[in-house]
Image (tube, rainbow, N blue to C red; front, side, top):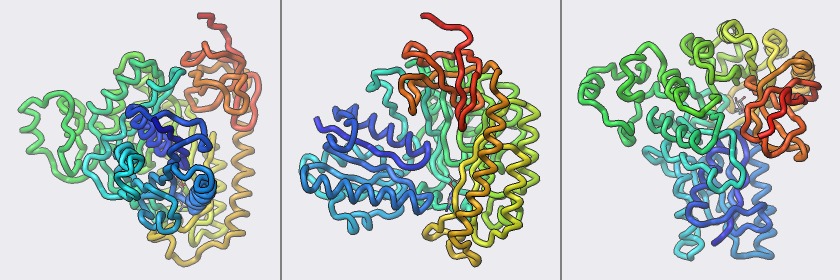
Length: 489
Ligand code: 5AD
């Protein structure tokens, strides 16, 4: 059978999509190649969030195509994911060696399309159409194909985004919000737990919007049969898009009416036996209600970690970005979170150089960064995206100014990070061991509940274990530790 290599750019959603595509191919008998040099099929799963990510993938495909066409003309080349969705046929017009372009609602069709191309039934395939119910098709995992047991897994709970931040291309590449049902998600999580997964990260573009929009179609009914009385209740339930969305929660919804569907989902996943930790990414500050904050105090498996993208510290810029919250509201959420869980790890995304950002606006981002003392910040220089409102806004910031602001903020972020990580030296912390350290495979790595990486001297037998370690040293956004009790089984 042919072998396939998938290279992934961008976010965790993309990682998850690649895994689902790989699992689908393995189920059909394909093998996974270690690298592109030995693969019969090379797929690039692309990111469109910034121009840089698109350029990287385009350049990579150019290089791969040049090599493949010279030495291995039978190799199939494809683009999948966000850039495939936004550029479609244009990608083949530009790079005629490309055989396949699969958009974000068609990942589950990839295996069939490859079969068609490899069998010579079709030459080129571009499929970037919308598909009802596609949010429920990203469900296969690679666990079976893995020699090593995975301790952690991603589970996609929804697709798309309705927020339309003015800088962001995602609503156009991923489509409108569509949520899977709670029973469907719980079934997937339960199966993962049964196969030894200890930690699940629930994924979506904006997970706090989970289930708030009624699905436009009842294509995926809950696994448990719905009592008739429930249907009657549904018929009279409020029909507005912002209704509490209890419909998605299935028959237990009545008891939870005051909680958002996302918190209802967390509660349902929390009940799964064998599962030790629950994470999610990304929430939106706008949707971070008290019910979610309170869940941290109530659900012990929900780890003390939040990735809460702020984007800017200036109210004026936040408004131009269409973020839907103010600096004060954001700081209020952070305060409540830390009140509920003092050890809360908080990370964020920040964009510098958004159109119209003045030095004063930037200083407000600096001061917010100082005030919150983020554990980790992902910094982005604003990149104009096709068809987004911000790309047309007046006051585009010159590249050197973006670079310079990025540098200044980076220095601050690193200084805060160093201080925060140093403070943990000497403490005892729980980690879940994920596998060998990426930088030094002779050592093992795990993650604290607050999402900090800890490297320690261990071995394969530690994989999947929850270990208590004592932190001995802090490096750059990495901790080093010693297990406090050596577990010998
Ligand atoms: N330019 C720069 N950064 C962007 N992001 C999204 N769109 C853009 C853009 N046009 C960043 C945001 C988001 C993260 C995933 O990518 O910070 O949270």
